[in-house]
Amino acid sequence: MRIAVYPGSFDPITKGHLDIIKRASKMFDKVIVAIAVNSSKRPMFTFDERKALLEKSVASVPGLDNIQVEAFDGLLVDFMHQHDSRIIVKGLRFVSDFEYEFQMALTNRKLDEEIETMFMVTCYKYSYLSSSIVKEVCSLGGDVTDMLPEAIMDETVAEIKNRSKK
Ligand code: ADP
Image 1: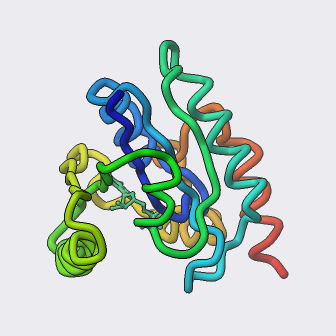
Image 2: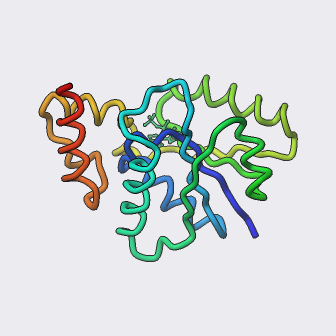
Image 3: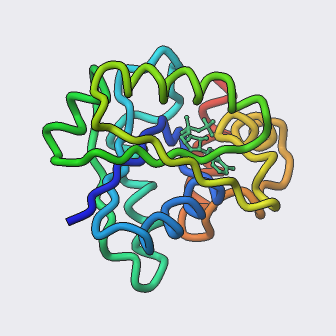
């Protein structure tokens, strides 16, 4: 069974993330979306909230039934071993993603040479998109219709507005 792991903070999931999940879902038997719980970024949404938003978005896409959402903490290679996976899937946006992702891919291979990182080039229309951009635009009252999955749009917009007031 080919199992891929798609790691990230997903704070919150965007249409860019969902696009990568849909495409990876066709390439592998199972895709584990690994939500980083203790990354250096301070998340706006708790792990449970990020998981719920991800699962709701995935459930809204017909046929997307080989996706599993898990928490991950510590080394990604340890998580990969625990879940019997050797393939890391990452999305690549502009050149700005490249340097960091290149370094991470080489580090993970150094830690375990059996592990491969596969990059999927972003869909052009989501190439500018990140969770931080969504939070920023939304907290300033801008329209994020094309940025968030429809299934989670209203609740996410309301929460971001609410939390960014504090
Ligand atoms: P963000 O940068 O949006 O906070 P994450 O840290 O959750 O995202 O990123 C997880 C993975 O998703 C990374 O591999 C990242 O490159 C990818 N990704 C994020 N946004 C997009 C997008 N708009 N298109 C393609 N891949 C993306």
